[in-house]
Length: 140
Image 1 (cartoon, rainbow, N blue to C red):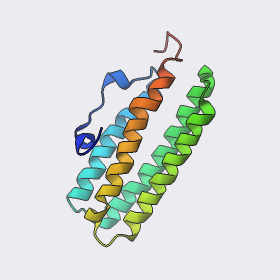
Image 2: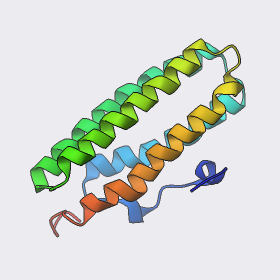
Image 3: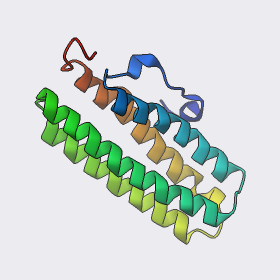
């Protein structure tokens, strides 16, 4: 996925892992990515963007914790590596949010947000699909 493809990217049931909580969070993430891009592109007030980002980080932290509990529950063998990827993505998210806080013009933040959201969506569509192969049949 590159260029503007991310912003047209939509949730597909092919991305479902078979866990209703995590799948719901992933589905919401795709919607949130599009909403953030639209908010930045339409030059919404900075305080609204900052508030959105604070909520997004809290949701991302909760999601990563829920996903890690799922991986532990099913005995996912690459949990430690996946957890490190979550930590890297969360750190990058916090960097981009700091850039938004400091920006004079939010449209200048669009490229940073674009690359972050692309990385997060790629994580869902590629890395998280590895979890799917370890899901018990009754869940998947």
